[in-house]
Image 1 (tube, rainbow, N blue to C red):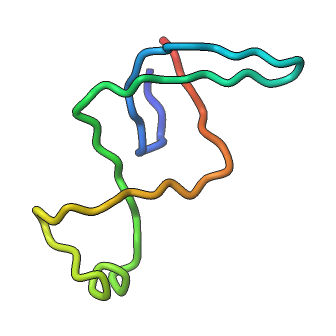
Image 2: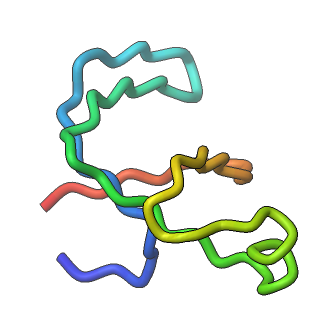
Length: 69
């Protein structure tokens, strides 16, 4: 399946907690995984980010979607 979203992390469903309306799906992430972040050049410069640095990716989103083939 092709999708335009860049931040795709493959994993295995380890549990499903169903409520009346929503369900919580826990996904065990398969390593290695790569997260792509689009940030300003100013942020890269201010944080002095360089290849090889150890940094944290913080996902700022209101929802996580899932896909299955």
